[in-house]
Length: 617
Image (cartoon, rainbow, N blue to C red; front, top):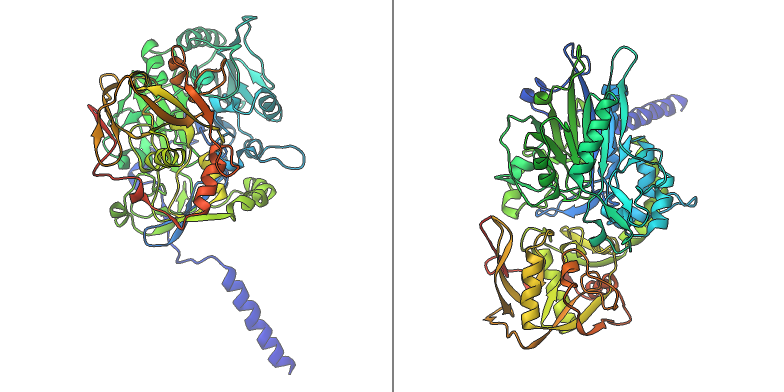
């Protein structure tokens, strides 16, 4: 009997051991090509001393992966800071004391979980950055959204420095000071045998006062070029071997294809360059600088993947919501310690997810049609620098503290969605058409008009939950309805469409816009989905918007490009919209979605009959 029992236990234990072993036949795709491996910088390079900088920006509080249902009904996810953390740890193991991690701002506001706190009043995003011991960050405009008291508490809990060089108090004329803030500074990188000095300059966007709900009129955001030239000279006098600008200032560059833009690879200045928008802050700054003033711009704010040289200066940035990270390798001569600018290398964009599509090595479906999807191949695990990307342990510990809070929202099912609703500030999208038409219908207004930042994240194919809508609309602005004459509407549209914030989504209008050489409204008509109609300049029309664009209080001013509109315009007969005891835009949308069976794209979006036409792209 004992013999039989021992045999049984032997087979049981053996089966259990083998059943929990990883599947050796499982495919793990190598991100890097054999060709790129030849030029991948090495720690022990005998001629060049490389300093790698790991970079994130505009995470907007998107800590957890977001679930997606694919066209073939399979499920996968995108994002997840546990995977971003793994990239960093692999680099840390490889590059040891030389690795730097810089974040370019907009850390917490924008995603549902971004403002989660634990019992000790610690914030989920600060726990992430502190767990990885990042080096430096800069303030994004949305860091101000929850007020200066929240921001001071948030920065006070950081274990890293915030580099801010261009924010002054208008009254005192003094540069503003926050907890753990420093002005431009030098970091020594290396060991006792060899080290270099890297100077860092921090810039917050001058668009901040017009793009946050917090009243910060007392703050002045100073001229970028003046600051950079002054601080660069000072840092070089202190012995800096290279100058890096860490700036929440945007740049958008248009490549021929998204494949060219989003595919992971090593990139140098000899690769084909993109067409960058000359109206963006970063573009203007870099074209105002003389060669050698800086060596690298680490950028954020425009939510665009960029690995590019502008006026000879290298720039890198990532898309929003933690979908990508990037690495810049700064090369120094081991004899002179001078930076070798022509040999700067970018690695990225690094896809942040559990699995990638085999044929494309990406996991971002935000720009992919169902037809394209058939060519993407199966989802497979992947490795980076010979190590598989899995959840990083220290970040997983952060996840455990907050996952119950997230699940409380994510388990609250609202409706199904069989389409991918994506937003862009550069033209008409199904997301913008849905949301503006939804607001127009529920309010009974003639026209809906919003800022592009009113909705932040996509509706991925699959279930729409309470968590989905909280990330989509983290601000919960109040909806307003008011009147304007046709002449005023035309003037408003001309003014905002020529502004700095891209294309403003609308419903009830048919619009033709020129993008180059400068953005300009060419024509505008009323549009009910079937026919066009001229706008009567003397007639009053009703408009629905939010109180960020069109506040109703006498002393308030509009946000984004509506700030200039408020220099001459005030809403007529304005009122706040309340629907079924719901006051803000987010709660009104949640109530609507909870009462429909499915969100249908074709009810709101017709790709063959667009409301917007953009010419001269």
